[in-house]
Length: 346
Image (cartoon, helix red, strand yellow):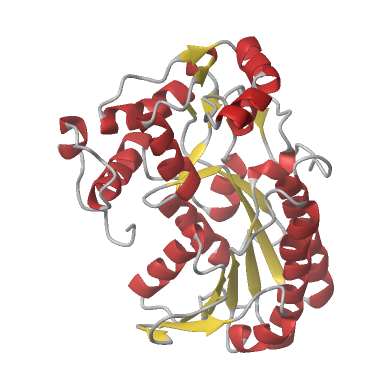
């Protein structure tokens, strides 16, 4: 069977990762359908056709997959509610796989998350770690969704490749860039245990590279790969970039035991006083991790390796934040490091 790329469908095309995938396909002049829940403007944008639909509405998907050879499944939802997560990440995946099989789609590249492995992680995380199917609604529903995709692919004759990215950052990333930048600017974040915990980050264009590799690699079908940057950064290093961007001192440090105490005992007071917390649940989950994510399987199965250093990625983030009016000034360290992105990498 040929692995030459044909027309692609991108679900979740209005989201952070989906939008970057659509932009890359447009740059490559590759025909694609982009699935969005609502559209403004023209339905045709170069090689891309915008299709209105929703993975939770199966009747809208036949037009989306029509003529497609590859599906990049980026749609997701249900961060706080397991029922909502299952409606989108599980049932939405079911609807998409059924539509893909009916349309003769060859391969689905399913975007999952490292969160399927839960929060109690080993020193080195590999794909051999079990899926954790209880606890965090997002991780649970994404784990169930990728399991269903593999099962349905085997039954319906559709190749399935699963990617489990770590924290996806880049220009416009709503949580890992915009939210953390604003928290550093407002001094509303603290470094737990001096920020010595490890942040496994992947630049969005490197993730797009991995997805494209997953669409064509002959050894990728049936494989679930963790994808991350070349090395983890400490949280002190990562948030230090935002401090430099906005001209603030590094965030204050707090011991883990004190952070836990503040989170449990002071939460009612903060709610009454409408005071933002310096330490939030997400910080306690992530800043206390000492895990390095292995990407060796992705190297072997996809023939992929990340190409963007943290310094280069954060320089691009600084340029975007400056262009969008977030930065009070652009520090010299970022002005001199910012250079045009290489072709096809935004």
